[in-house]
Length: 238
Image (tube, rainbow, N blue to C red; front, side, top):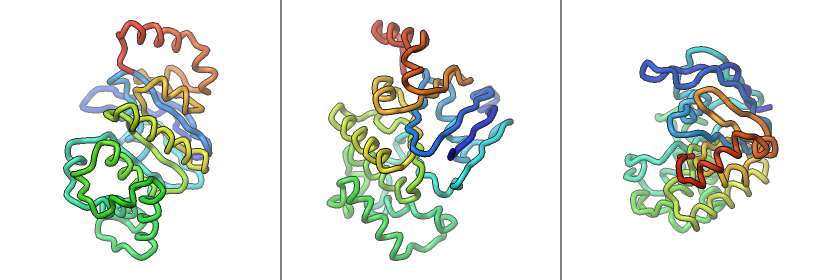
């Protein structure tokens, strides 16, 4: 086991956003966190990585600490306009390994950054301004940055949102390869088809956890059947 979340509740802006959620992440998992907009997915993940204070419950780590988590948040306008080179953005993923923003990079850090640029097929972009990248290139760069922090666990918040179908397929192929190489993945997704195709476990949020288990168990539920029926009618944002 890598992470155990036990009965975690979180309030956000005075409202209960996460209510008594429990789940576990095992080494080698690809856990997809799904649910409608406003169901608490991002709040839960921010709580796990330590960016959101919880009201109650526990988050326990086994064989790693938060500084060894590679975190890729949702894309924001500020990220897209970041005034730095691609290499500088990717290299900044090493900061937590040295204790924060006033750390100095060493030769090992620079090699790890270069290796991850190569690993994700964007070494040719290392001198480009981050703000000049396409959406797909930007996500690869941010994923390379997350990989600079870890060889154990990636936590990704909607990594394919806003990408075209070709870029989406490429991102999923990258994540599938990383998972096969032994990196555990926790991924928030609105892409239900991608979640059940590439994940091995599903956590379905509706402020509480209304399902947690294997993909096979999930796709056999009435919950999943109802979601598919509503999706066919174009009446569900997941």
